[in-house]
Length: 175
Image 1 (cartoon, rainbow, N blue to C red):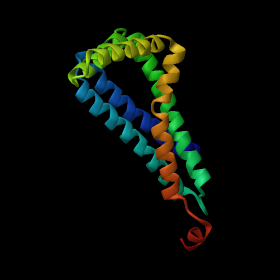
Image 2: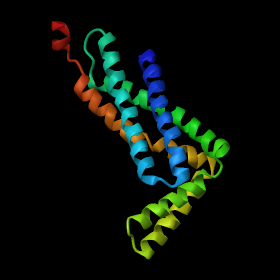
Image 3: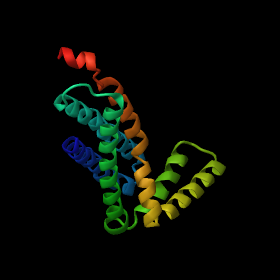
Image 4: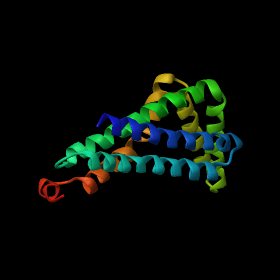
């Protein structure tokens, strides 16, 4: 199980990091439409690797593979990927692109303005963006928020993968 978790967790992280590398210049340039598309696409592709990791593990596992074990493999792949993403984002945010937080605030405000929101809604969005920036400016909350970002998608991908890829004892005996 360790080989599947590490291999697919690191590949999943690499996909997510490629997405991060591609979206950062777009966020800095204020191109939120393209950054959203690339960012969400990278998240989905990264989560797909959970499915492939569970499938790879199932193909090498003898006998039945229950939902719980398959789900655990998927979750561990997600955790490896998320931990690498946290470490990379810490370096990006605090060392490589120190103005990232300000660019993110501007991007959120521009997004609300481009959507034709009312001045009150834009003001609320600006306040929310500044609050998020304050949270991201602290390494501990930055890590927690970054870790929480891929987790829900990874949990869903793990559950779906486990449901589709589990192998019952009767089916395993026929194979």
